[in-house]
Length: 61
Image (cartoon, rainbow, N blue to C red; front, side, top):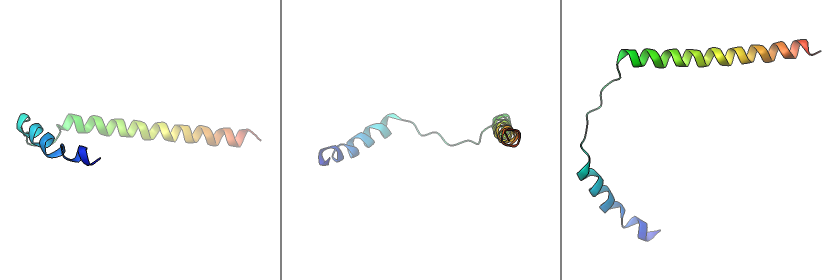
């Protein structure tokens, strides 16, 4: 393990010298809307599964 720790400064220096730093930009409104729609769809799918489970529990007796 000690041997691996000696490589980190060299590895980090090599990586930073080869990569260019790009400023963070907020995602476009369309991307945010798409993510929101996906989250809503996921929530509706969970609610549907819960309703089916409840229906199955009520009708199985």
